[in-house]
Image 1 (cartoon, rainbow, N blue to C red):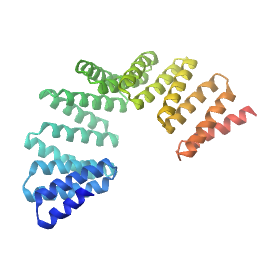
Image 2: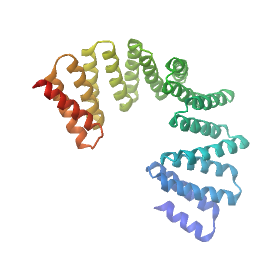
Image 3: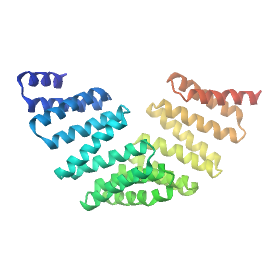
Image 4: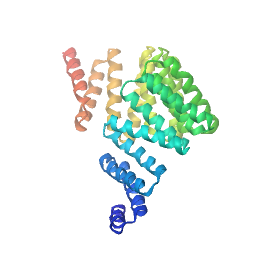
Amino acid sequence: MVHRMTTEKARAVGDREKELDAVTSLGSIYAQLGRPQDALDCYSRGAELCRELGDVHQEGSCIGNMGLAYQNLGQLDEAEACFEKVLVVMRDEGDTAREGFALASLGHIAEKRGDYTRAIELHEEHLKLNLEHGNEAGELLALAHLGEAHLASGQPAEAVPRFERQLKLSGSSGNMPSETHALGNLGRSYRALGNPDKAAEYFARQIEAAHLLKDAQSGLFAMGQLGQCHQDANRTWKAVECFDDQLKLARQIGDQLAEAQALRSAARAVKSLGRLPDAITRVSAAVAILDSIGSPEAGEARADLDQWRQLQG
């Protein structure tokens, strides 16, 4: 690897700045490849080099990346300690973008621990920071995080105004990915509030936006959720149509897990309509796919299949 060779050469001749550039570039590559331990080793070395060079700001950046690596390794205490350091450094340095990154990262760790009160406080602080500095992109991100924290904490009514603000800002600025994201979260919020009709409106809009963006994953999610909304509202045949659309898209893009999930959702729906043979056919296909990809969902699907076969006699 070119960056590794550059790192070794720079270290051999004592060129700390060149080694720093090489090691941080290598860390970024490892992070993108899903190799967090290797990324952590690179950024740890980068932080050491920054201390030798007296570059406080760059050291804070390396420590932030160390936090992300620790988080991906599931080591939350170490990740939190890194982000706390970044927060202090970036406030001293006046880097509001990285200060916001630290606040958001600490908020996510609080969510992982189930401390939603703390998570909401951190995301609100992040939102306030962006509002004070007129950072609209940061505001959109903070609104999304804040709404998701309220939703995860069982407060969908508190989540709605955050996602509505995100949707409005996204639309006015032409940020379609953020708009698509907000539509889906509004759908989730209204479904949690027991309003499947309102939720269905947002998921239908998310499907349209995802199609325009060619964002298949958002489309798959929205189709499945729209189907669930129709089931919640006792429109089972419309639910089956949505799950079949989800199945078709999943097959088009080769997403086998989504394909199996669409089959299972449709199977449960047609079973509720009294079409047991159709349900068995669909869930059998789902079991075959889940087995082939080694999914832990295979056991649950097989249990449904066995039970339904017994009912069929």
